[in-house]
Length: 215
Image: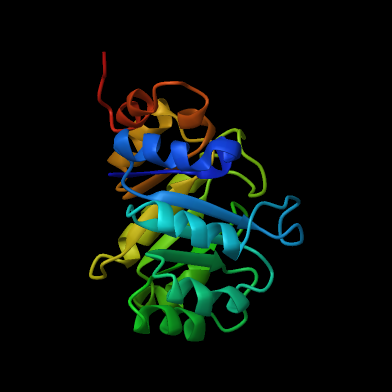
């Protein structure tokens, strides 16, 4: 299982140092939450910051677009060679077209689902997806409580993607306890922000999500 720390919880005044520390701690992916203050009630960072982060690290970058105009971001994210890009099912009218644009350029293309959005809405295009990002909190803020309603969604995706190479990513309220159950249920990528960055020992927190004890 891959661990993707969300830098939304990092110290942005020391971002270069935080990226070095999280890489040394064993992060597999860096998760970047782009919020526009419209689709979600918060505003984070945009393309200029992502461009700088891309220069600072070779770790795969995972950009989660929590914006109402996701199509406007894709060309620059492709040009930056971002590894994973997801946008919300609720915001894009022609998802198939946008997924094709990403995949044609070698970007892993995904769709993110809010907790209240049925996973069945993805089934007609499941073969066009490289991954699905399931939100286990309402998006917009870190530090929220995990919503277990994500588990039936994982089961539905696994049942319908048996013959597809589909990664399942879960984001929101992740800790060492629910990580165990998510792993057993076939989740491929865990996004964790405050759980990792709220402690000094990032490696210990990351390994605990994998079920390993670090002394």
